[in-house]
Length: 551
Ligand code: FBP
Image (tube, rainbow, N blue to C red):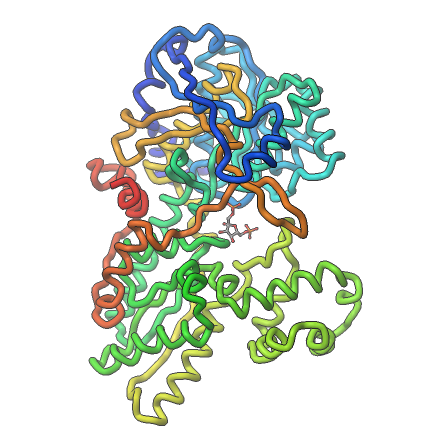
């Protein structure tokens, strides 16, 4: 395979590790704390996780660990959307296993959870691992979104684990995949299997975090990639002085990415879905906020600007949320009937008679292409695929209309010309920043120590992330500690709680304290591209979000 110059340099990069993981391997011992409890719904979860509930937090200390040098067979999967650094989790796990015992084998199951169900795997060689070190993407073994949920699927995974003689399975994924890891850990013990299960916190969305998981990997690189692009667009906007750029940013549900990019680039407007929901803002209110900035800037002859829109916004607008809920139910209950209705107009007519009056009215006022996108296929979890809904275009259309009305009354005298962008896939497979490269390698290595020490039902955790890497604190957090019960597709299910943007949190407060100024003035920030080589303050810093959260 031909390689770029940067790729060759990145192959040679040696990820930094927490100090305890760099010493003699047999001196990494475990220290277990007090029993833990779940976030909420302790009784129900204790009942569901009779074997694994309430385990103690694990940390590593210098001491004797006789188990660590045993030979192991471990399987690993990448699950869900790509996030920069996945290859380094695998490399860290592989290197840890080989340091423990050169005879150990790491199997990579292909295409995500379905590779486990169907038992499709490769045994990694040193050459393969070397060809993917410090690179973006999940192409080393691929990923997938299949959910392991039916008894048949659980039994198939158990069969794979038995056939392959797996000492452990590492699941690299987001909240749903780590919920699956918890269920599998419990199931394996209940079935008398010795296979351990360890999760790793992945997602660019940044919504798998809590006191012990300070960040999900990939968030740092993805935000830096988007922020570079936003900064470039801001400079173009300020140079050409003729466009308003509406930029939708990935993040299925939480607005962490939009918020972090706003902190890095200081746009004129950044919408935060969690605030929209908390204040029960309607689409018209949101359009009003954008127009207020446009009108004020136009008065200073600044007919240009930048608006950031979180991908999940549409689902947080109360009236649209209700509409989506009704559509989801109708589409689930009448899947066949609806599919047999030939034309879009007839589908709308069919829905119109079944939606509540308020939802039907909203549905009819939406531009046809947006209405069509709301009816597109759901993901395997039954969610609307928000990355396919062009919220940025919906808002541009509504803003245009409102400004035209304001022009008639003389309240607005400027010119409005808008361009729509969507940044999502551009950031998911970038070369991991030094932070993500180091963090992921440490997460993989930590997963190995947890496995070798005989733990199951844990997520690999590396903390103290705003300090230099040698001061990071590796360990394990029981998966049940991060869980509560939530209603999913009509019934109460154990799930790892998604971390949304907290309106009382330091990152949002930092943004809120500056946004009025940004809305009127041109105070753009230009972070530039990710720097991989140079002084640590340029290359190793993580996100503003984590820096503010850990102050
Ligand atoms: P994960 O939660 O699996 O990490 O994926 C997140 C994400 O990148 C979202 O930001 C986005 O909405 C979604 O994946 C897109 O999914 P797909 O890759 O299936 O188009």
